[in-house]
Length: 361
Ligand code: UD1
Image (cartoon, rainbow, N blue to C red; front, side, top):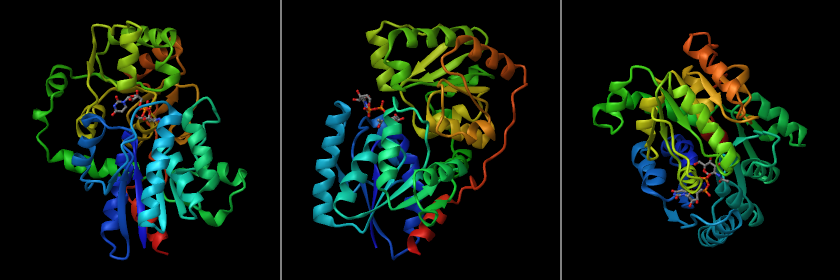
């Protein structure tokens, strides 16, 4: 069985790593890794391959930068050529980025089966590019691997048949547990952020990159004002995404004195920070789930989430951009009054094994 495993942007790399590891145990599966290069910087891409132990991609598409249409078109053209020459039996796409959408469309039109890992998630907010990517990818996929029960409800409502839907748990949580074990054996004193961690017995982590939060000057300013107020009581560390850095420069926004900005961090370095943080302030999808898995309080700077289990069972709450709401929640967290949450069903580190077993079947 010849499988193409697609990765393009930072949140994809941690999802393909456990799948590749599981595939390596089965000689019947021959797989190739396709990197679309949607993310291309050393610290947005290469470092993840090194740290997560993913072998080098078999193909690079060089499709980074540009508008959504330019990026998507470039990925589609490059991927079509590879499929034409190499003819896989199955294409596996993960998550909800432009690479997920582009490669699923190409494969499906070439009558190649498509499996979507992390299928069925819906924010019901079509202003998010990821929601469009999720809906289109799911509308044409053949096999659906789900991370939470709500995904099942969403896909059944969209007319999918039950036999195609497989609730398997979460490959990103497989990766989290795997890397956590590796981290325990590492000397973290060499990390560039080691000094920050030594200096601050308590701190919070921030990530922010959604266009709805960072592409508008007033919204980004308001968010930073809130973070500044919080940082008067708790130091914050903020590995800053290229999109956000670009916009802060254009809008001339300066962070508060107690907010430490860094370049995007490697997986291990960021994990080493957030696993011991008092809280995460974020608009990331993945971090909402990862903090739930480890029981770290998470305030999500969004009005909605496609990952509702992190709120109903986990440690996550939706804040929107309301300064008052964020500050009230923050006070609750530092007073030790935040919900402890529970680990969702099947988030046990074995999702990739389940996926592999289902594919082999
Ligand atoms: C993409 C995903 C988003 C995901 C995020 C994680 C889509 C629609 N969005 O958003 O779902 O949460 O990745 O980071 O697919 N850039 C660099 N170097 C890089 C990568 C990007 O400079 O290595 C620049 C790009 O040139 C562009 C900007 O950052 O100007 C945004 O990159 P892009 O891949 O278009 O979207 P993200 O905002 O990263």
